[in-house]
Image (cartoon, rainbow, N blue to C red):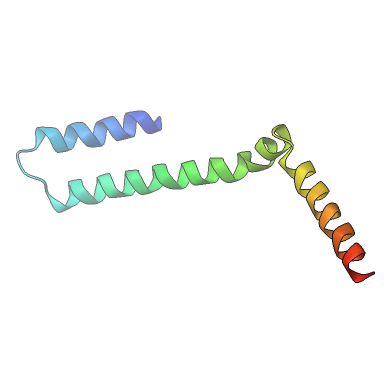
Length: 76
């Protein structure tokens, strides 16, 4: 079952009931928690390709090299 279908099913179940029961609320919280964990996992997985695309790793390496050279000059 797709995540969007699960969210819609949970939302419809809550909308059709006249009162919010503890099981409805807990089901919604579990779905939201799962959704946020999925987003966090995707961001962590995509971090390296995003850094590669924007050349962040290369810029950091260059800045580290500049810092090392400046500290070397300072010691002289």
